[in-house]
Length: 142
Image (cartoon, rainbow, N blue to C red):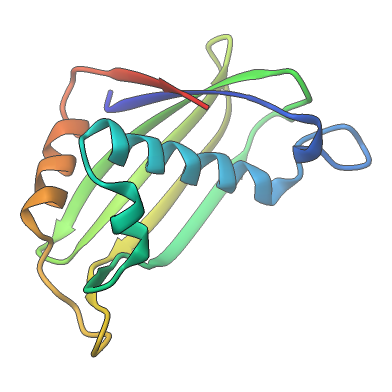
């Protein structure tokens, strides 16, 4: 099931009630996305510098099932899917000891930075999609 990322919830990610602030769960998902890019061999610094191509998020949604707390060790299962020649979607499943805690989706579009127009996904992103949409999971930690 794609890329698997382990994340330990930190105190600063929680709110006054002692649970993870809702937006921080999307941050955790994006951290897993970044780790999957690096694990696939992409130069993450150049990728996010976005000198010629960028991959903005055009849609996101998240369903929260159970609260996460400081110290929880969350497993994030990331599975990307190509939507068309210039866009992809990532499904995230957040689990704690095999219990479903949350699920999220981010949708990305590849654009040329200079004119902000759609561009076909480059080879490196096609390879990233192929690597993590397959059935052999690999693990990273954050």
